Length: 334
Ligand SMILES: [Zn+2]
Image (cartoon, rainbow, N blue to C red; front, side):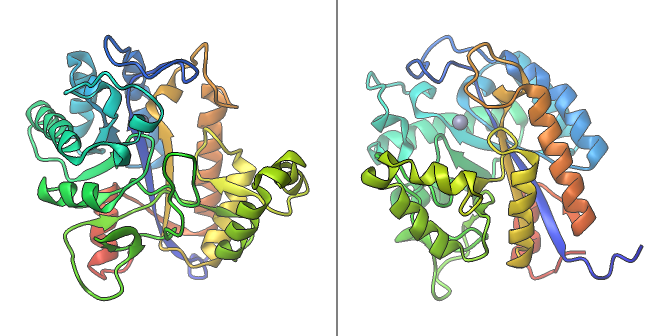
């Protein structure tokens, strides 16, 4: 079978590598559980058999636990993954008494406090893994100009905090591109219009709709989610009728068939990259998991989606920094 007619894409899997907890309770600040990290060993073997080169965005409780570091360090040293940084402000020293929804979002905290937390996290990662960290994601998503400036100051070259089309009462990613971009440092949810900086590259996770006109779909979705139309269950009706589905490329949230729909649309848009994400805590079956899928179903969703992608595209698996290098150095996808 000829491979010539297929588009070429990069595939990145990023894993928020963090404590397990019950999302229905308050954010855990001390004595958090990180048993799920032990499941990464087996998960990495699955990834190796497919060819996936995961990027583990590691947070403070994980890097502060020697057994967790042992698991991740052996994978890192074998060159099969990338270790990035993940900032959960509620459990990353210095820990503050405020522990509410608002302050769980990095973008809402005083910037001096964010810097102190970032320094603790990056230093601990460096001393545990023996090298600098170049990639980053905020806990619970979101980025702004001040935080982006800090990332540059502390040597981060790739950010992945943009969650396209997402908005809640505490932050939003309105208007952010779906494909990777050089952010405008005064408003990092927008690409820079002219060459201004090449210090940090933004690599959002793959998200979109079941139609190619993402901007229009987002407008309709936003409109249908207004209080009145939500009351009439309009977003749910549009979803059921498959008229409009907002889909995130995460095997925790989306079925294999919805992710395949999204992949078809992204390939039509000639995306250079497919970026899937999941949380390490999904690698164990939690008694209180709020995910629609079990661990086994989630892994099946991931595998089916990747093999579907391989049927429809020439896929190059890479870590997030490897993807950045390929996309920004105009090497093309080999
Ligand atoms: Zn997280």
